[in-house]
Amino acid sequence: MKGEKDNIHLSIVGGRVILVVIFDHRSSLGLVRLGLKKPVLIWQ
Image (cartoon, rainbow, N blue to C red; front, side):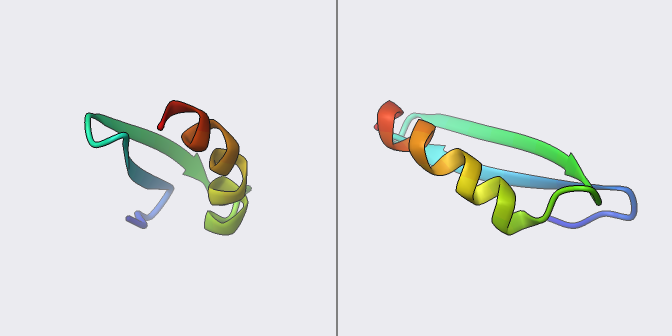
């Protein structure tokens, strides 16, 4: 979701956990997804 000042990225991990990341204009969605790829794989 994209807001005026901040963005929110939601991920369902392992079918049980909702991971919420809030970031601002200094980070792109692609960068956030790339940074979460490895931790999400570990949690699943």
